[in-house]
Length: 126
Image (cartoon, rainbow, N blue to C red):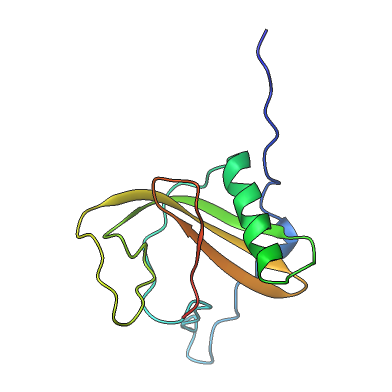
C-alpha cells in the first residue's frame, strides 16, 4: 500500500497569457514579463508539498493574506548560487545548482520564487 502525498495545484490554464498578434510587418512582437535576462527554464514539474508550504509561509510572513494560485513550476539548473536572481553587492557560489522556479499569483500580483537544493524559497525581486 502506498501513501499518497498532497501536492500543489497544477498551473492554471487561465493564468497562461494568450499569444500576442503579429505586428503590421507580420513579425511577432518581442514581449517579456520578466525584467532583465531570462534564465533557462526546464521541464514543468509538480511543486513538492514542503516547497509549496514554504512559499505559503513566506507570503504570510510578508503580510500577503490572499490564496496563492500556481502559475508555473519548472525544474531549473541555475548557473550559480544566485539562482538566476543576483542581488547587488552579494557573492555567490560559482557552480551549477539544480533547483526549481515557481511562479504564483496572489490577488493579481505575481511572485517569482526560486529554490536551490533545499526547501527554502528565495523571492526574486528585481
